[in-house]
Image (cartoon, rainbow, N blue to C red; front, side, top):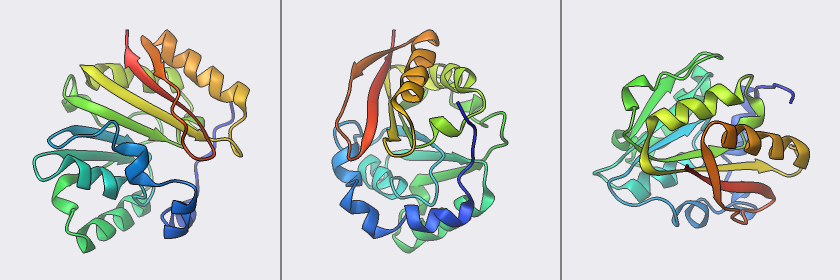
Length: 185
């Protein structure tokens, strides 16, 4: 699996309202996210899904976003402030080898991994970290763009997740993506 980090300046295109022609954030997330939840979104870019996550968790919930690019988090923060959602979103800067999420162990209800697993150098470590932070009834939605991630690579990521202790609960249809909803075994 190749490892490539999306350049930060492409984030503007990924946050574009035109992207809604392929992906409706509310339709994608509403089946999984409820008010009061704690949600983790690694690799949020400039917040295309983050803003909707913040709306869905409501004032009593929180969304922790983790990215390795400071510029992505800065733009996401500004976008959230303009919409009055910044208080629900906690940005964290990571490095390429580890996410700063140790303090979340057992407290995350839902993880959104949208178009980012293919960029990881250590998918096994990623899924092991998610197991530690998820509540027992928590779930992970993994979705990768069909045009960018080959089926064989996507299936390899699913196998890695299964080896880390997840099972596939569903295969939601999300735009032009390959997607699975994972739960802990």
